[in-house]
Image 1: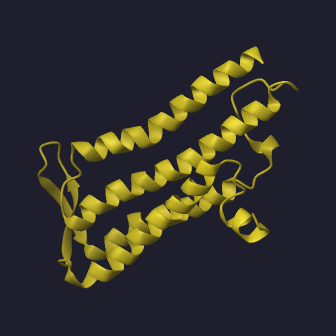
Image 2 (image 1 turned 90 degrees about the vertical axis):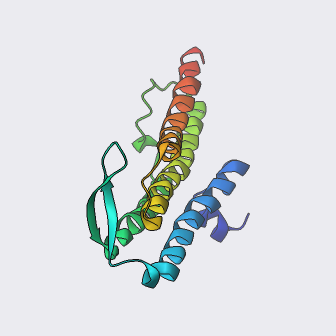
Length: 165
């Protein structure tokens, strides 16, 4: 892989790093383009808060929809940039030895890549219902939980094996 794509994809080490490195920003850019395309058709006031029964308890101007969409893009850029930090800056939560160092840093890189996509999914799954004027339903909360919990649990299980290396 040439240097340009290598840098743009966050120095991928595995095929799925490349796939996730493409999907994460693509999801954020798609949200921005979609919101820009439909922005004029949205009502001036949009629901922004719901109670547990699904009733609208707060509204704001439609411009507030840009906050979460743009925050998702900024977050994605930050997560991309974090991939360039020195490995020594990573707090892996595991005692490093010469035998487990490469394995643990590989797990940490995987976690970073997975969390980047997970956070992109998080912002998308929150943005879409708000843009559509719907309450974020149960599916949204399941997606949010999975996007955040699965990479963390996967990392914890994998690095627990590092103690035996």
